[in-house]
Amino acid sequence: MVQSPNLLPTAELQARDAAHHMHPFTHGAELGKKGARIITSADGCWLTDSDGNRILDAMAGLWCVNIGYGRQELVDAAARQMQELPFYNTFFQTTHVPVIELAERLAQLAPGDLNHVFFASSGSEANDTNLRMVRTYWEMKGQPSKKAIISRWNAYHGSSVGSGSLGGMKGMHAQGGMPIPDIHHIDQPNWWSEGGDMTPEEFGIERAQQLEAKIKELGADNVAAFIAEPVQGAGGVIVPPDSYWPEIQRICDKYDILLIADEVICGFGRTGNWFGSQTMNIKPHIMTIAKGLSSGYLPIGGSIVCDEVAEVIGSGEFNHGYTYSGHPVACAVALENLRLLEEEQIIDTVRTETAPYLKEKFESLTDHPMVGEAKIVGMMGSIALTPDKATRAAFASEAGTVGYICRERCFSNNLIMRHVGDRMIISPPLVISKGEIDTLIERALLSLDEAM
Ligand code: PLP
Image 1 (cartoon, rainbow, N blue to C red):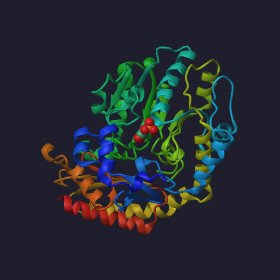
Image 2 (cartoon, rainbow, N blue to C red):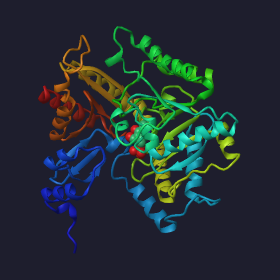
Image 3 (spheres, helix red, strand yellow):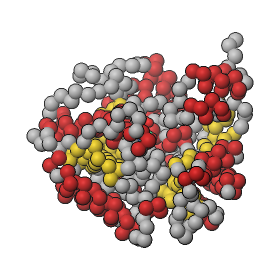
Image 4 (spheres, rainbow, N blue to C red):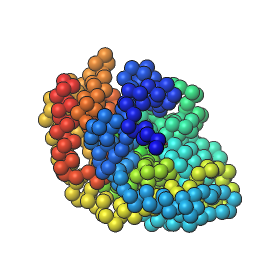
């Protein structure tokens, strides 16, 4: 019998990993020194590592395991589909049942006239689709000058050249020739760090009006779309002031600019509704989806597109697609995931029970001397670490690794939280119980104390 690699000594696995595996978003030298934490199995909200530790995953993997780990129904759905039809493509006038059913289901779930789905295998690919689709839409409508896409600093829309350009991560732009032309960025609505003397509401309006100023600078005839996450995720879980989104919506409507809501994190229950656009009350023309669509069990993403854009694009040939657009096994798993989310009323429970409980506990973290604001929507939240709550100061840059130290303390206390600069983030599986929320908060407080 072959020995399970999970039973090999941790140090041996770490050395083999460091020797041959190039990790995304990881400093190579750090990895060589410390070795990666090796996750061997998971159930519910809990991971097990190669040393047998049980770790509370307050990040749902990478914001994606909405339904929790270990759902046999998803395994069975994948196995059934693998036996029946493991692959066929959706190019050149072919289709199959899982992709038909999933597109139809997404059209039912999505708000308004978002009735058409273009599939991909990830959020990055889906945003590449959007980039090309919105420009092609305006070309086909006889307005080819409408090419520019406006996004926000610190937005994360993916890691391919197109989606990384749409994103606003300066560290990414510095490597490998990004952003590509005709992409422009405005500031994010981060009141805690950048709001100065303004009230959150004043600040929300000021930040939204940067969009109007940018449109006027470029000329509305040159602007195709504005893209944003309803609640910015990887940029630090930046919950916008209430005034922000209504003003953005007004501006997009006024200047005839397509609105793309990147729902890769916010979609499928994360904010307490099926989509973050519903929570923020916005009406996008296109929504980007991935992650929670399959709860991360298999890679799948896509763009849900409104009638008008789909009709124009469908009036000719859109020369775009991926081998795995609408992969049958990924579609079958996504369908089963959506079925469970609905039948078990998981999103309703988040909205009415667990998210309000989490909000109360999470906001009480501001009693800790190092925690400034605590912001949370549904099951995504962040705390801002500060040496001085009154001035909302940031830690000096040489000590700016406080977030990193906190994350490491969380790790050693068997809690996974993420840090973005000096913000600490949570995005747990939607099935987290009240008892597990208590454990999350206890371990977070302990880690904050140890990091002081
Ligand atoms: N859009 C948002 C809002 C994301 O958070 C991410 C990933 O974290 C992406 C797009 C990219 O998705 P993927 O990593 O599946 O390519």
